[in-house]
Length: 179
Image 1: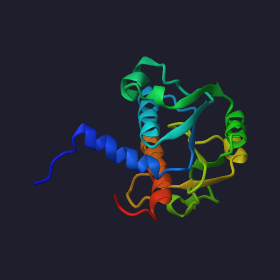
Image 2 (image 1 turned 180 degrees about the vertical axis):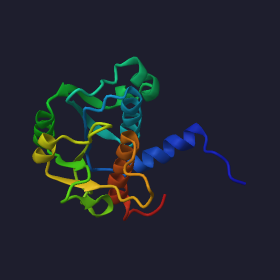
Image 3 (image 1 turned 90 degrees about the horizontal axis):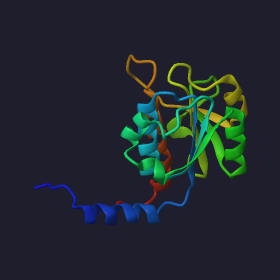
Image 4 (image 1 turned 120 degrees about the vertical axis):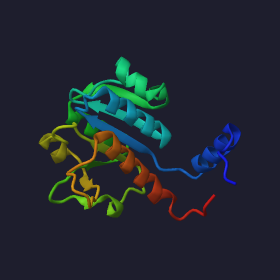
């Protein structure tokens, strides 16, 4: 019979994965204004061990009460920076040692699973309505997209962020023995 892990077992399991994690992850949220999206992204960022998160454009900060309701305190676990212009956020991430990759459909974008995410990488997601701005796309080191086979044109921004963070960690962990 299967049973859920006890809190102590979950902590032990997470500690094992944390010990096998060396790459740094960063994120830039450009003009993500929906507070529930922001809160959800912060929860995913905390779960996947994002080290730094830059807000850009008119992104809603996690201090917004609605964002906080979804983040459930996880915004305290991720170092985040107040909103700046998108190009400044890219510059700051690059100066911190990250390769900056936009999650966006562009002519040059690579499928997410083929992008080299097994390194210190800062993933960028753009606004709910328009994605990443042209200025941001000109500033990043590259772009990748999430392949889809359904009849919907895009993912919700919080879902896209979680998929991209998960793929970055999967690439890092793919050669580890299952724990």
